[in-house]
Structures are given as C-alpha cells and as structure tokens.
Image (tube, rainbow, N blue to C red; front, side):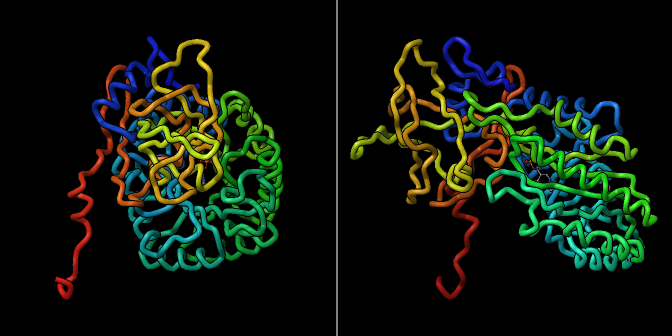
Length: 422
Ligand SMILES: *Cc1c(COP(=O)(O)O)cnc(C)c1O
C-alpha cells in the first residue's frame, strides 16, 4: 500500500498534487511519501514482534539524508556498504551501534572508519577480508564484532543481476567452507564472532528460497555452537520483493516473511537483524516526467519523455517493469493505446516500456512512474550531461526539495581544464 492516489482528478503524494510539485520543481523529479516510508518500516518491524530484532534499512535502495533521518528517528538501524553510506547514516543521527557494514570489498580505511564510530558489526564476506579486519582492529587496540556472510547456494529465482546466493556469485563464503573460516575467526586477536549473515538476492517474489536459506543457516548455527562459538545474532539480509505490476503481482507480505523467520530460526534464541531496502523504499517513491513529443514511428508511436535512463536505470539494467500513469486522471472509459515510452538519451536502451497501453497523453502533459523509490535516484547519473534528477519529500500537505536539481554552471564547474590545455 502507498500514499499515491488520484484526488479530484490529479495524482497526489499524500495531500500534495504532483502537478503542483512539477510546476514548482520542474521535471523529471523523484517524489517520496513520508507516510509510505513510515508504514513500510512499521509493517516490517511489527512482523518480527515477539523476537529481539533490529530492522536495518539497506540504504543503497534510497539514501537521501531526509529519508534516513525519517527512518532513523523511527528506530531503524542501517545496512551500509561503503564509508559514504556509513557517513550518511551518522549524518542522519543513526548511532554506530545501529549500523551494520556489508559488502565484498571493504577497504582497510573503511574498516578503520567503522571501528572508530562503534559499528554494530561487520558482515564479513571472505577469509581474506577477515585477516585484514583483524589486523586493522588490533592495530587500533580494538576487537571487531563480526558475522560471516555464508553463501547457502540457494537459487533466489530473481533477475540474474540481483541474485546473490548461488555458489557462482561473488558474495559470502560457501557454507561448506564457512566452519573453517569461523575457526580461524575465533583464533584471530582482532575479531569477535557474534553471529551469522545471509542475503540471497533482491526482488524475491516467493518465500521458498528464504525458507531454504534460513533452514540451512539454522542447521549451521547448531554446528557452530557445537564447535564452541557463541552465536547470538543472525543477520538474514533483505530481498523481499514488491509489486511492480499492480494489476497482476502479489508478492509475499512482510507478516508472512516474519512468520517464516520465527518458524525457521526462532528456536535459536538469537537476536535477528533484517536488511530490507526495496520493500521499504520501492513503493514510497514515484518519478514524475513530462512528455516532450508524441512521435509517429514506423508502425508504432513513441512517447518521448524528459526523464531518461540516467534518471531511472532499472528498465535498461534489469528489464524492469514500472507502472506508468498520467498525472491527470483520464476520464472513465478513455481508451488506452500501445506506445513505446522512451527518454532522450542517445541509446536504444533508453526505453522504459515497449508497446505499453497508455491513455492518450500528449506533449507537455505529466506522467508518473510508480514504485520508483528504490534503486531509482541512487542509481541516477549525468549521462548525456543531463542534470542530476532532484528529490522531493512529501509529508501530509507539505513538501520539501531534499536534493535540488543542480544548475548547468554547477555541473560544468566540477570539471577543470589542465594548465597545459589553457
Ligand atoms: C542490496 C542488499 C540488501 C537489500 O536488498 P533489497 O532487495 O533492497 O531488500 C540487503 N542486504 C544486502 C547485503 C544487500 O546487498
């Protein structure tokens, strides 16, 4: 459920008309709903009621400071994958003890930064990383709390680019090798083992792969405890999918996911962490855009927007579907016609949808991409020297620009011409 609905014939974010935001901020622009973020966080949090837990928002999905502050104030922890993200969490007021550090390529400098700021735990992804972390922590006179990310070799049945739990993926340590790595961890001076971590992929629309992975982890915890490790924490990752095609998708609910967690690992008496990103942010944001041209092609029509793949790369990158709707509600009974929805970037990959049935929208009119809150603005770029897309946060009847569109001068000022060319 989200808070983007038609009111008086105009699509609104909560109580604010998207046409008003477009008039004030221009297009393209991302618009987020505070109430939707809040609702999704609470639904997730409540799904784990009755067991000690921390919902660590995977901020790579949408890391605007305003969004992080909103979630942090609700008690969310953060899952970060770089020093930049760690700094965002701190800047939003989230203390180190609620920040978990994931990622396959943490550098010694990033480890140092995290240790200085009291990181909750490192989710270590290799034996090699473990050695470096121990050295860094020992050198600082500290001990690094860790989980080892195990790779359970489970097929998440999602898009290949976001499947992470198969043995051919770069993530984690194969579960068959993990026992040995834990033994090494216990012997290292700069390491304190606190738990086990697993994350098998993103946009999972079926609970079975989670069930398989969590059951494997539960068995593994038994083994580790028998080996003498004090396993008190389980990080179960993120990955729960969201409905991108409202008409015909119904992914599992957080409540059922929570029940599955209780059923598979509840008996272990561990504190559980989960790292949802997409589920919290995805349906909390839309991308609004204007139609520049409606162009007649050979046997097809193109809707050319002022948004492009540099603003929203998911269709080009993951073959992703986004519902596209006119901001002005079409009259009942309006006929939809197939159009190719594209951006102005000089690549055929800059296509949002092919043959999409849309009510007739013409030049100058506004459309909204739904479910664009996750992996939207964070993956935007200036490709084709298009200005970075702005972000707007709505709360009730208020809205604020939380990342402005830069000016062309600002964009140009970042480059410098070396002396020898002057
Ligand atoms: C990307 C990622 C997540 C979040 O995945 P979602 O599908 O957005 O929930 C969580 N944990 C790790 C380690 C990740 O890499």
